[in-house]
Length: 85
Image 1 (cartoon, one colour):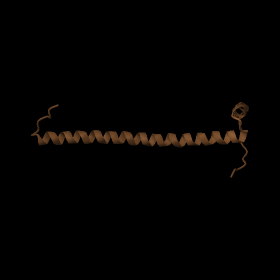
Image 2 (cartoon, one colour):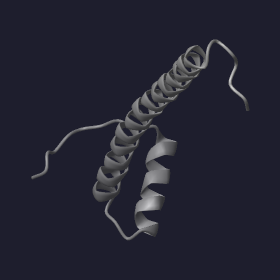
Image 3 (cartoon, rainbow, N blue to C red):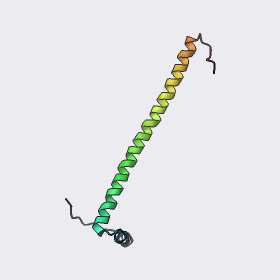
Image 4 (cartoon, one colour):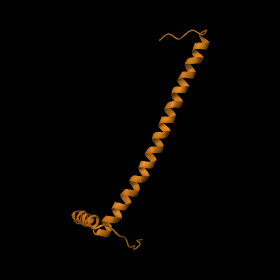
């Protein structure tokens, strides 16, 4: 299903869009639809990547904290002496 909408663009933008649409063998409407869809997907993927990146940083910090804790327990179990490297 498609919706008919009225949009305003600068003269430069619409000329570039027409040129790209022609080069790709698309109507201006089809090219603009594709461009808008690609932009929306980039936004979604960028937001998703940011969340994954933050989660990865949190997981790394938790893993390092766990490693320190294991080291402290090992030290205590060995009579408080530092572990041999």
